[in-house]
Structure formats: structure tokens, C-alpha cells
Length: 365
Image (cartoon, rainbow, N blue to C red):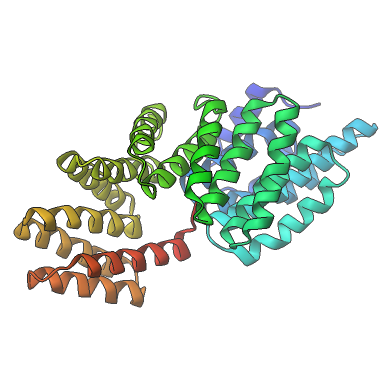
């Protein structure tokens, strides 16, 4: 007999994840549709907050889906196929979130094959997830086609929360393709349909892509609207008080304030983001936030404070990471600061290098 929601929640709460993740495929008490649903939610939450931990959970999802009762009726067998299709798609998304793009192909191929005999809703869900992978692979035409197909279906069905997710995926593809004007329009529509209380992850994605597109535009009205959206998103995810997404919002808010010439407030937010990333061990993110902070300190001529911040960031990075390209770039930056010969072009080049390495190590989007 299927578990009640209360019992399934208790089973999930008793697991020490990710350490106990293999238990869910080893003990029949977890082979239950209600537990599967809750475990899927936990996987997606962890992929959002800590992609590497999320991948550990998602790795067992296909096996867990196979262990669920298949049922006897046509509807029960359809539900089983849909659970399996979704499990593979989520695993593919977890590989993408950790920037293992090649490894994401196999689970997505399996998800697409299963989705062919599933409902149109599952087909649209797999399409929008795959669109994000294709955008990350720079296959922009395919990404846009997949996201638009999903958006058209959800719009016709008036499933507006799901529509916001498809539009957020489309906006991400447009940002990656550097089509910032189009991305602004699509991300703005995604925000109209998203609900941070129902799906904070989609709301965060739409907000982040809207802000990123605005940063690369010269439209001060769009930048101002993005600033308001970022502040609202930050208020909405108060339950993530210490998470990488939360501190990324502080960082992006700082960039928007810099664009709006509110440099002192931008400086405070870069410092808050820098310290938050440092506490969470997100050294690449910490390095980028520190570089942005250093740009403002450089413009203000605060060399002593700038040197202290730069030296701390360099030592912290070298203690944790062994990425030679980033270490070399940060050493050039620190040396220029120590000699008080920092130039905007050098700062921009170092920032681009660190962001490129951050994407390779952490995953983008």
C-alpha cells in the first residue's frame, strides 16, 4: 500500500543525505511513489543550492524509479514511464549543473526516448530541461527551439507556472547566445508568470537572466527594473540565508548598483557577497566578487584596503584550488595592486579568466 505523505516525509527526514543516498535503492521501504516525489523535490533543491551534492542524489533517481511498482493498468504503467523519464532528465540536468556536459547526454537520450510514449506534459518538461543543456553547449538554435516548444505547449494549456520555467530556459539560451534584448523581453515575461512561493528556483533563474541581460544593455530603465527584481527575489528566498544563490543575488545587485552609479552601496554588496562566498568555500565566486570590489576600490584610490582584500583573496584561493590559469591571473592582479599600477584592461582580463574557470569547475546558468 502506498505511503502517506506524512510517512514519506518521515522516511526522508531520517536519511542523512548525501551520505545515506544508496539506502533508497537498497531498502524496499523507500520504493514508494510518494517518497519518490519528495526525493525528486529534494534532488532539485540540492541541484539548485549545491550542484555537486545534488548530483549525488540524482545519480540514484533512475534506479529508484525502476524499483517503483509498475502497476497493472495502462494509466499506472504510463505513470511509471513518466517517473522514469523525469528521473533521467533530472540526472542529465544535474550533470549540466556541474558542467559535465558530455555525461549529461546519456540520461537525456534515455529521457527523450521514454518521453515519446509519455504525456505531452512530460515531453514539454524534458524539452525545457534539455534546452538548458543545449544552450550550455552553445547549440543555441536547438536550445531556442526546444524551449519555445515547451513554452507553446504550457501557454496553450494555461499552465502558467510551468510556462514560467520554459520561458526562463528560453531566456537562459538567449543570454548565452548574447542576444540580450531578446533575453530581456523573454525573462520579463517569465517573471510575470513565476511565483517565488511555488517555484523559487524558476523565479531565481528568470530574475538572474533578466538582470544579466540588463547589465549588458545600455537601457537604464531595464537596469533599474532588474535591480528591483533582484531585491525582491532576495527577499523571497529568506530560507536560503546562507547559500550560493543568495549571495549571487547580492553580487548581481552590486553590479546593477554600479551601473546606476551608486558605487558606495555596490561596494557594500560586493563585500557582503565576497564574505558569504568565502564562508561557503565558493572560492571562484569569491574571487569574482573580490575582483568587482577591487574595481571600485581602485577607482576611489583606496590602495591600502585594496591590497588587503586582494592578498586575502589570493591566499584563500591558492590554499583551496590548484587551477594554474586562475592562480596566474590572480597573481598578475595582486602584483599590479602591490605596485599601484592596476589598469582597467588588466582587471577585465583577469575577471574574464576567473569567470571562465568558474564555469568550467562549477557549471553555469
